[in-house]
Length: 377
Ligand SMILES: [Zn+2]
Image 1: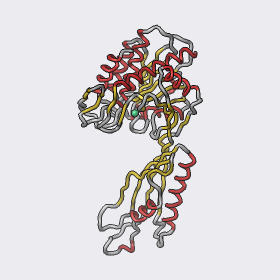
Image 2: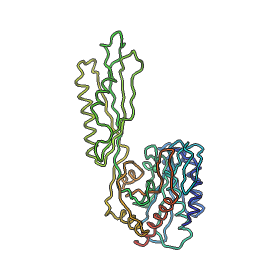
Image 3: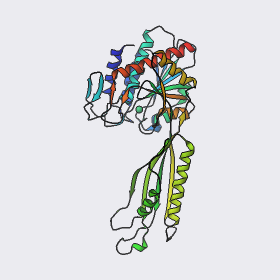
Image 4: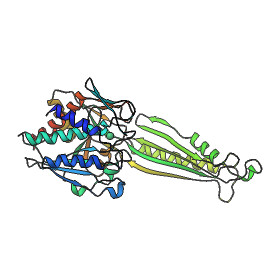
C-alpha cells in the first residue's frame, strides 16, 4: 500500500460534503475512481425508499481465486454540522477547526477501500472476489442498509468499516426500539372550571416517574428523549406525548421493559378517580430500529479477522458495541457481518479526529484479511 496516496485521498474525501440524503456528489466521485480502475459499479434503487438523492453504491471486484466472495462496507453519509469544513492536518492527526465534524466517520472507511482497490490493481498476489458496499443514510436510521438490493450482492459475509480501534473487532451490538407514550385527557378552562378537565401532562408525568431511565443494567439502557404537550397556560392540556428509545443485547430484557411501560401506563390511567366519556386514556407504541447480533470469537469470520491481525503482529480483542450500525441490518438479513475500526475518534462531535497511523493500520488489516481469505480458499 501507499500511505501517502491513502492520506491524500482521505483528505479529498473530507472536503466532499455528504450529509444524509445528499450523498450524490460523494457517491459519484467514488464510482468514478473505481470505474477508472476497471471495476464495475452499480447503484441500487434504494433512493426511492430512503429519500436520498442517490442509491447505495456496489462495486464488484472479480477475484483471481475461485473463492466465496467477501464484502466490505462503509457508509457515505455524515452527521452535521458539516458545511464548508476547515480541515487541519498536523502532527499526523486530522481534525477540523472545531466548527464542523471531520467526517472520518465514515470517510476513513471509504478511503481504505479506495486504497485497497488500487493495491489489488497493481500487485500480483491472488485474492478472492470482493464486493464493496457504500450505503446512504446510515446516520438517520441505517436506511441505506435496510433498503439495500441484496440481488446485487453475491457475498454472504463481510466486514463493516465503521468503528474506532483497528485492533478491536466488534462482534456484537444491541437491539434498539423506539417508543412513545401518549396520554389523552380533556381540556377545560384552567381557572374557571378545572374540574371539567383531565390533565394529560400530569398523567404522563406520573407514568414517566414510574419508569427507569439511563443504564438499566450492564447490557440494557433506556432514554426518555422527547416530551411535548399542552397549548396555553390557562387550559387544562388534553394531550401529552413522551418519546424515547431502549437498547439491550438481550431481546428478553427489551420485552420486559416494554411490558413495564404498558402496565405502568395502564395502572396510572386506571387509578384516575374520574372517568369522562372514556377518558383519560393512553396509547403506547414500540418500533424496532435495529436487531441485536452476536458472533462468538470461535466463528470463522471472527477467526479470519483475528488471525489477519495476529499475522501483522497485533493483539486483537473482541468487544460488543453499544451503538447500531449497518452490521445490525446485514446480520438481520442473513449477511454475517462484523465491525472493524478505522481509527476515527470522538465521532459525532466537532472534536472528531483521526490519527493517520491508525488509518494506515486499518488499511493494512483489511489487506491482510483479503490475503488470508485468499490463502484459505
Ligand atoms: Zn459511522
